Amino acid sequence: MSIIDLRSDTITRPTPSMRKAMAEAEVGDDVFGEDPTVNRLEAMAAERMGKDAALFVSSGTMANIVSQLTHCRRGEEMILGDRSHIFFYEGGGSAALGSIHSRTLPNRPDGILDLTAVEAAIRPDNIHFPRTRLLVLENTHNRCSGAPLPVDYMKRVGELARRHGLKVHIDGARIFNAAVALGVPAADLVADADSVSFCLSKGLAAPVGSLICGNADFIREARRNRKVVGGGMRQAGILAAAGVAALTEMVDRLADDHANARRLVRGLADVPGLSVRPEAVTTNIVYMDIEREGMTAQALSGALEREGLRILPTGPFQLRAVAQYHVAADDIDRALKKIRTVMGR
Ligand SMILES: Cc1ncc(COP(=O)(O)O)c(C=O)c1O
Image (cartoon, rainbow, N blue to C red):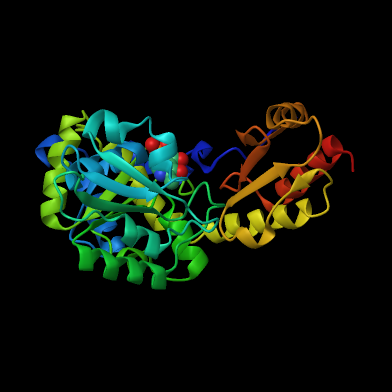
């Protein structure tokens, strides 16, 4: 039985063109700044994001912690969403490694942080308070149905941040999904941010790696912090070569994943015992809530696994399905058939 794996876009494997590029990559010692392929990838990334410079790091988590360490000093405060990946899934690294104080505000279901609430959370200058240094937003927002944050919202964020002297970091692990869904260049979505991180190893299917982009001074300092956390890699061009192929060949096809996610949502509409919010799905992530007495997400995912379908439990009664490169439209139809078999229709 062939398995359909909808747990995540992180399970994607490198394409034949990536493997060829990796085998043939020109390399050097990147800690000395001498790896031509890493340098090329960093230049491409900076250009795509409309920033001066970029830094190649091993993961999205490393990109986020290095960015936080570069923006904030010990005891300073960062405002971020209560459903954000940094707050939820990064091992408390902000506190553990940065002594950064996290001030969470509720994410709306579309990933947005209400800007009136953000403004009210900014601390006045008073020795009792931590200094509010950084505002973090996530685009697309993983735990908010993969919602993209639009350009006009980002402009208002930039205006607010400038007025209060706040730095803005975008966790753009899936920024290209946002750009493709909204039909705008990624650079337009991060023009008002001081830093953005994005991942090569999710929907873009590269095996490893993320980039941090920002101005030249920020990236120089981030390079120091990358070394501190042990992220200075040597002949990393082997990995960067796959990243160059990912940026060149894999961005536009994200539209196929978005179409497949919508196909899944349409098919789930009449499945009894499962609730989805069709209007929420505009990129590649679909959340479904179980509404059946006595059925848990663990039990349902186990039953689906026995049918050859993998879907990730993300809460006691919630599961997540993510459309990705190795899943075609007819796999979605087969997946729906398996879900109907298990749910009894
Ligand atoms: C929004 C977001 N940010 C950051 C990350 C972290 O990426 P990594 O798993 O490469 O550390 C993820 C991973 O899924 C993510 O979804």
